[in-house]
Image (cartoon, rainbow, N blue to C red):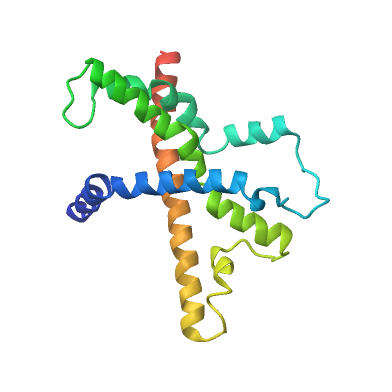
Length: 192
């Protein structure tokens, strides 16, 4: 089993980073398109909808979410990590290492990283608040394509929702796994 995990890890970290960067770029382009198109004027919840939370409360909830530990701890030291252990065979502590370190930090914690959340969150928000669909299942976004109630349509919907659940669990486990070890290490230094 460890051999299979190592193969999967190698594929995801060595063969597919280009896909992640492409998705981030396209998401950022999509965000800019939405901002300046007619769709940027659509208010989630309808024309007369009011926000449930004040801007400060909403921003605080965002920052204190699962990404909070990563942003608070790794987000501040990530640049130094890449200076000391730069990618692509760059010499550690070199000028080029500092240049790549600043670029990597902006990619991971900047506009493009947050833009990745936009397409699905806009689609879910629109169908939930404007179209009044009672579910937040991703398969409900596909109802115009997945028409009918046949077994293949139901199985496809279940597959979509299963993949999304797997992604949620993977993201949560990764965040908790990385954040817990960092917080434990910091607690150890604090309470020695």
